[in-house]
Image (tube, rainbow, N blue to C red; front, side):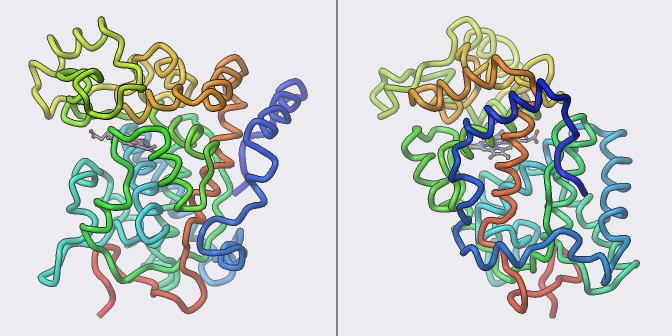
Length: 344
Ligand code: HEM
């Protein structure tokens, strides 16, 4: 599948600026796990072994996103959580076993959705070509197609990922960023995955779609930076907005109430998230933390004053990098038959 949509000339020029914004070295640098592994992923990996694979995934995802658009943010987040723990190897899709709790059951993953959809798509792909297409690839393709289906960017998804056989709750707890992290903590965590500061800034833009539960940002509603929690440099949530959430949504629905992260356009992939960040209305400390860094703040200001296509381009580029994090290829791992269980 081609990368982002073709752009008119003036926008192309802006995109050229955007590419400078993302930093000259970003695309050339290999993600952790090595340049060699990344090169083994390739566009059209299944062209001969399962030519229908990408069409089956795309058709099914588009059909379901049309019916239930909230599937799009769900799949995007699941793909990202997969890539951050043991690389993009489908380990997020495995169920816990008698031997131990899997990533799926780690607290940050309890709000993930879309596992059943992935299992169904994989079932269809298995019918067409048994034992050929990995769950990790199905998830990476599904996330891309779901975001495109709600009018968001599309990006290159080279394939050939193999599925991992290990999935532990503890690793997910350790590896996934927490919404209360500071900028330096987030930068360090992303760097550990071979992703740079710009990737952090642009990938956080995924929060332009989807919802968060009040429990995920309760710390910002009921306590303040001055309380001595070590995050004093992160600007607090806009006072009026915080009061509104406290008194309405998060009060009536409690910790389980869901709040749109980009209110009013939470299913439209647009610049709304960055506007909320600049207005101190982004829900998590980790979002607010982006403007505590002068360079990140300048990048955000640049993108916000450009057409949305610029954001699409930089986001697409960082998604392609995220999708290559520590992938297993060649003879590593396996091609799972069912995404929720390892092959026997
Ligand atoms: C930078 C560190 C990040 C942190 C701390 C973070 C944290 C969170 C949290 C706490 C939620 C809400 C969960 C809930 O209450 O239901 C959320 C939602 C979401 N995140 Fe992130 N996230 C980060 C980066 C990313 C990235 C890199 C992506 C994708 C590229 C992403 C995509 C999403 C999406 C799409 C949702 C909405 C999911 C839905 O509607 O079900 N996040 N994130």
